Image (cartoon, rainbow, N blue to C red; front, top):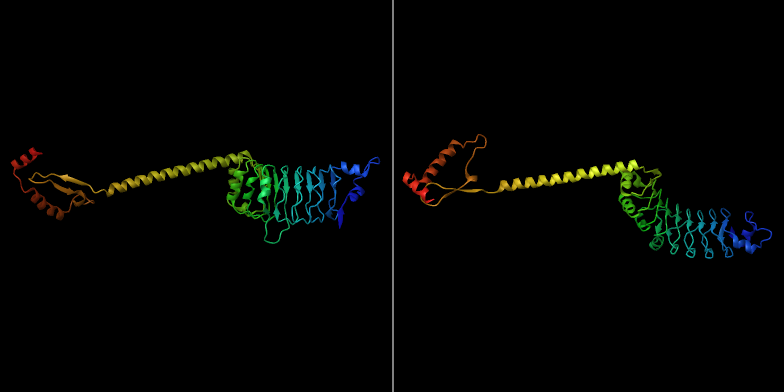
Length: 335
């Protein structure tokens, strides 16, 4: 294994100082270092490299992030495909803009508090134990809430990304080959991320859900690319019109249902009312009350049965008492 040291840098074929320059002065001027795929397992003391802004260390065997506290001007750090299990010792890199940590052994995204200039974070394809998923420290997410614009979390067995709602300036999210299941979770996230214009979720189970693409396009006005496919204005406008028409039909159906229920309720109440009508017979005494509901009727032919008719006649005659003409006139005059 190889340790990255100042001597190794000075002897590198790609980096040779001019004849009139001292090694110390040369190291202070270096802005880019590329030691990718050099079997490096440890980062030595590189503090003389004060101007270093871009450091390539991918495809090595580095297990710990060390001795980078000095690199206060570092803007790009490439550490993908190493053996790193913990994100640490980076908080002093205030100017860091891009951090590449893909294909390591990282289980938790943490230790990035204070990096308020970080715009890109790539942590795809972590080599995690079977059944485990990549997690996010809320403190780190909160710290990156206003700066992060590009996030790559692909192939990390992730099943929930609602916590990313705090990344208010995120405009690109790459989360392919995870375990995202629910369209509602994505709708929730898109309602929060108002600047997101590119999202790639290919390889997630949620992509197979009915109307998956349509629902996400309707939720987000800013989204321009979904799963590598452009969202054209015609497609979005068609879906907006379709949804408006569908909603209008629902409202109309609901209104008609309410009106029908009210009508049925009125008729039902009307039919259950027990009507009592006073009928005055020309006789001496109190008026006779007759319940219409008690009067037998034949709904089939409109005539009462002969048997019922014969029974009613004596009763009515009995109630009237066969008054004389004068008695009838007298009773009417009193009324």
